[in-house]
Length: 201
Ligand code: GRF
Image (cartoon, rainbow, N blue to C red; front, side, top):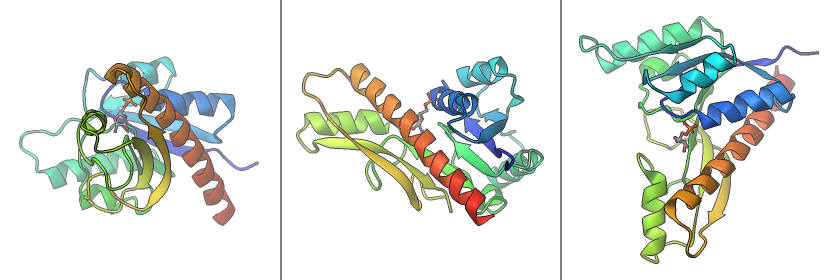
């Protein structure tokens, strides 16, 4: 029996994707263990989810006196203490510089609620929904990718799922559907990666 992979999860908000990972670890769907949850916001509900699951969690906020690179290096040093196999950006709302990324080459994974090359950055779902209503697109999707550099929501693709728009669907209904697909894709992609990682170890 191999040891479960160690996951560090970085969040900024609700943490529904964190919850999907926790549930998949608990059910045995993922052979993994969440070793730390770090939030960029003190009020993130994801921190409550982490505490409820008995996982060490913390809030990491950039001091005014430190540069972005210094903050990222401090964050990397802290994350390293948990010896994670992978770092999952599950709604983490800060762009990470090479001060962080160079510490974990090929080990930082991001989730984004749009397809590759479409709607990078903030409010991707809102922008996709509006584009559909202007008749510009018929579908959108979600993706999971590696984060090699500071490119926003861009990097080697690990998995994607298309989502077709439905006529007369409210934004809230659409958003709920996107989140559901995100949860499934994230867990499915992690499962594949963790299995490959074990095989190549
Ligand atoms: C997700 O839509 C994710 O793709 C985006 O931020 C959202 C986080 O949702 N980057 P949650 O905090 O996991 O519920």
